[in-house]
Image (cartoon, rainbow, N blue to C red):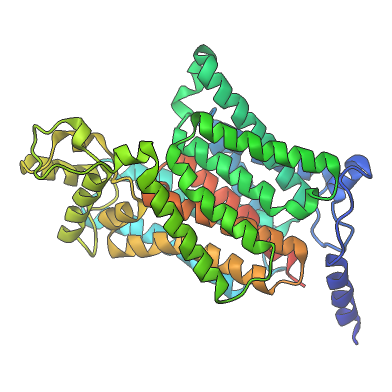
Amino acid sequence: MSGIDKHAHGARQGRSEFPRSLFSSGWKAFVESEGRPLLHRMGPGALAAVGGLLGALYAGLNLQLDLSIWSYYLLCAGGFVTLLRAGSYLPLTENEKTGLSILLVFFLVSILSYWINGMPADGSVVVYELHAKFLFAIGAYYLFRGHFIPDRLIWLLAIGISFLLFVVALMDLNAASLMASVKPAFQPLVFGAEALTMVALIMAFRDDWSLKRLPRMLARLGILAALAAIWLRGDDRVWLALPMVLGLYLLSRRAWRSVLVPIVLLTLMAVAVFLMTQLPVLQARWAAMPATTSESAPAAWVTQPQLWQAAWTIIREQPLLGVGAGGFQTAMQSLVDGGNWPQALLGYVGPHNQYLQAWASHGIGGLVTVVLLILAPFLYCLRVLRASAYRDVRQVALAGMMVSAIFAVLCFVDDALATKSMILLYLITLALLLGQIRQRSRL
């Protein structure tokens, strides 16, 4: 065996060792994390900076969005610096090339549909302030693929954000005056999606906290705090994604079988659809539409199916190119002016379904790229989870699957990738997880 082979063999053996206890060696254990050879560890100061920016980004999503945006840009900038300094050290794999291509095509489809449709008035905001962030995510990905981020930092951050969300929910419930300054950033769907994302991160890294009493207690309290926050102030539709998270977690505790996985996932999707029809708040959204619609119809008649029906009408008229970024409301105005749709439809900026919104706005290319933005990370993480010999890599892959599944469900019931907050939550979390898979699997 050559010297290189011996080094690689020794590194693989080191990766199979169970991590040292978080509370056995104080801060040093927290910074160095697992006792195994890793070529790109951050120094304590850099690691603290990255952890602080991640914490600021997650905290700001529901408190001060500008803080999240600037934290995101700083993380992306750090990634581009990493790319310039050592971009060739870790060559792109075919999977990475595919993922980066999806991001580029998504942005190109968005900007082309915007130009072809005469640049609708609000389209510049969609293209340059929302969809451009998908390109910046490449920088964030390079930051996390180029540097090792300890598991303990990830799940402690998730626990801390879970407690923060619980406190924010209580404040919003009982001390409205204290929340007045952050009300514009507080959105129930974003709040619930972030809380459930934190639950997924804590559960995925179970092997890091399950064997010690204090970490186990903190993790369980974090999960309860996040779920309580959803119950207090989150959007009720977020609960539809919980069966997917729990199902993926239960499947991860046993061997993954090629036949079992799709059966279980389809069953969980069926459960989510059933819950959609049973939860009282969702029954109101799915109330039966009247036999006819008119401009004088009351606002209460604008239901989820009616919004979807309006979106489908727009799609049938422009199935290939869509109506362009920012053109959805203009198209809705045309429907209302035709006299067959209620005026209340104009109060909605989208059909409350990301897939229909992408198809109506950007054509069939928009639908395909949005599906790939969610499906591709899920399938990649599934492959890693089933094939990797390293326990920590499997944990990261499981977290990636959970996050993708959460957004797959939420995109079905809302325009989940049409706001800055949701885009930042999705992109930074997946950049962190997918980047760590590559960082830890390079040997």
